[in-house]
Image (cartoon, rainbow, N blue to C red; front, top):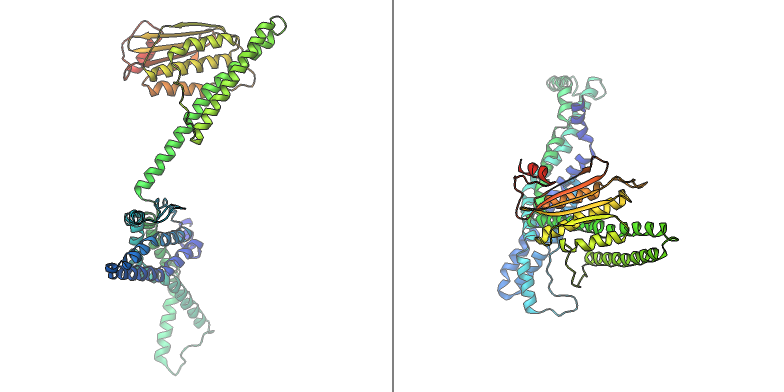
Length: 455
């Protein structure tokens, strides 16, 4: 019953009559656009020898895009074709405020001639003159046939009921013919009913043929679509990078300030010198955070013209540990790597900073052990903190841990995070110095991770 209802509902659907209207105006519009194009090209080619034809041809080519915009609005409004708007021309006859030159006009004409969007619109005009008459006939049939069938059935019912007069008894041959037609019309009522939506369905499927053609001819070309997708991907990548940078650098500074402020407040009366030093550290980190935020905002605006300092790496790990200790954290560090390839070096620093930040945030007061070793063909990193009290109202560390996993995977390495047997938390990462990790086993905390990579 649902399929039957769907079949008949197409007759009075608003979309059906929008499509019928589109097909009805397709013939006059097709004739109009075709006549305009043929006339302009003929006149332009005929007068090209006296240079006026060049102006006519250029004008004709220039007007293709406005015609395409009108056709695109019609297709989207009547057919729901969802045709995207193509990119702008990207060329001008002359820049605003500057005089027009012959060389500039030549470049403009060359770009106009190579505008693929204009040529596809011209192809659409040619298709309009071919599809227009057929679409007009189908749309007309979608209107006339249902009206004729329903009117014939109503006349037959009226004749059988005696409401509609017949040819009369003085013409028995005509009366017999009318009786036969009325009989078969009434007997064939189901056939008449099923025939009513038929042409509306035919016109609907014919109008659907226009949708892919319109998207090809009136929308952006394949190169434009690829460029748009690439631009969106680059924007998403930039947003992720900025989000990660904000989370890593500024988040670390804010966390250290919170730890420093808590420690300073705790010993404010008993050790005022420590409290003053804590306030100075908070001020320095606050200024550094503001500078980092300004730099990120400048990069977003595109006016970051000042040279940037190199990103920190393993050589800056002692400074990171010293700053964390100055903030009041208890850290035991074993830094066995003094240098590494830049991507690995930066990742080691970023992962260590994130692990220390998480420990300070989620286990305040717990001892932290940082170990960075060179293990054959890789750099092994381990940050573990003892059990601590979770901070009320804090969420999990999923975001930071996801960043650690992504950074390690990007270099072909592997990471692992989780609780230790005594209730603490451990961050392990193994980053290859070359392309990938080997499967050999070494006597180190990262043995099981190598097995995972080599499996």
